[in-house]
Image (tube, rainbow, N blue to C red; front, side, top):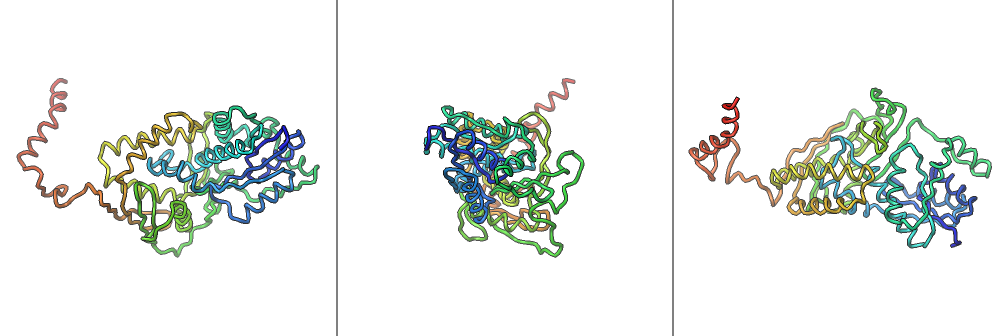
Length: 395
């Protein structure tokens, strides 16, 4: 390494390709790091590595962070049943936090003087990377060429072409970011709040009309998915298989409208079969095994945890406090959930657990029970309404 060395978070796209060449011309030895959080087939990782070498990076590293992503981020999103706006799984939010952490680890391992990313000044990702880099590695210089230079895509393409690097023209109408926890889709229809994103825009494409209902059983152990249809799998394998199963059915598709970190409204399409199937199943299992007060506070904690992750506050100390609560709440969340998938829909048909709080031998709702008498129930009902009776009399 020279005295002037930098680790660049590298996706292999136009922006990070420009960054590689630009930084090299500014006198930096550039090491590129691609953090695989899902969505990268082997041939794409090979293409990214070859591109890095072609652009003149002194070294390239690929980090398989799929298990790290699950253990450090996704399991808490499942535990908290986190869907932003009751709809959007925080796929990009979790990926960027994970990728930033891994880039810092590589920078510290290599002993470089700087870290860099290729985010623009227009979106959420710049904040997520900046906060992570400055918090975890304040001793390193932070370099952001795309944001600092404010170049157009065409200017970046021309810059590279003048130096003999011809990037393929952007193909397709839509911008797609695929990861293990979901795929985001952007296009002209997501620039306003009225237009409809067509089915063809999603990676799964049009939904076949001849699909038969697909039964499925997901098993959990302490809140973590451990099996599909009785076959034991790693959590990462469960997520990847559920994505493959649910995608043809259009499970987990939607368009999310919400607030960005920068304070404006944004709209994005998404396709996240595994996230929606796991959260729906996990939520139903929790209804069976957790108390009402646990469920109430878990919803509050889960929403706060998701907001902190999404908005770039993942390194606030309160995050670890929330994770401790969520982890503790999962001690009894073990069991099986039975679902049926149909086009654009999934239904939870049943749930069972060795820790079930629903016991027909003790009491059946609306029917008989052995825990109290009718006279005791009448007294309870009378006392239960006393405060309301008194408040009405006071009017």
